[in-house]
Figure 1 (cartoon, chains in turn yellow, orange):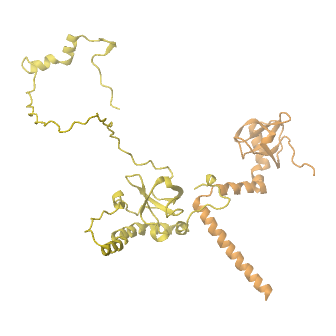
Figure 2 (figure 1 turned 45 degrees about the horizontal axis):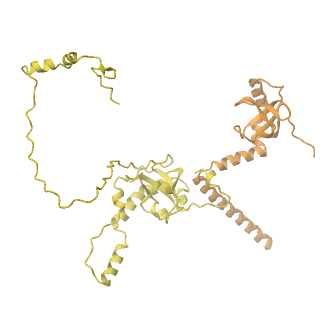
Figure 3 (figure 1 turned 135 degrees about the horizontal axis):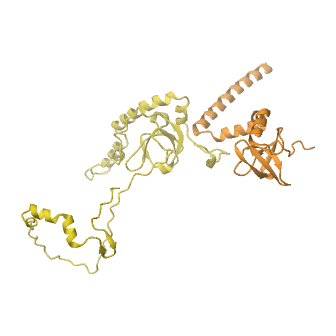
Length: 229
Length: 134
């Protein structure tokens, strides 16, 4: 915090200050300013006030007063990551079509979601966003120093907005549907670029690839609250 | 069936309840019908109800309420730690602790190892069966 400003004139009792009016005049050095400015206190030239714009009277006055909601200028911070979730950690996804899959965590995006990859060749999980709440962080770490994730952000994963084509008949409809289903080659290349150094790092540790290829599940006799992940 | 493990001065016991759960302690004195004065190299000498103690087979040679130094020396001389870790009870506890501390990856590796071992055993068994059949 900035150091407190020194008050020249402290309040001794409510309503009673230490230094008198004339002493304050001297303390503030107003005499020196006046002397510098030839006996008078310097005055700014008045700024030209813009002519008021002609406002037309409104056409419509609402019958009841509408209350304005209070202004809210709060900005959301990205969710705080649990201590167990650090870049390179193996995560277990708990919900969605990839439930039970063990996956490598790359980075946290600005929206707070976690950027994650299978790698795709190992377990079929592509570059994907995942919510921290639906994930278990294990204590297994993978070396992701060779991976460049700077180009991925929430926009990359947003839905592609397509311009509406002319209102066609059923023929157009079918043609559109077939086009949308394939992944653009860019994304496939991105996947490969991210996964290549990762696969090398995985092969360095024995059994790690098989581990990531297997799904996690609860079996008889396992107590999840006693498991160490 | 006579009793074999007695509450006596020098009896090593395992704490089975409370803050000191899992520790090996030595009974250094008996307070009354229900309580013992108990001591261990890593704790302050204190009283414990017998219900909190599980007696072991190990006994060390000490006098009533020895000083800490004397107690530690006696425990070293009798090699309490070594005896405990060799005993089947002690080994079981060590294995339990190891299993509880396994990581998710460790559990996976364990599963793979079990499957491999079972595979090898089955192969050998099949060989032996073939030999006896033929």
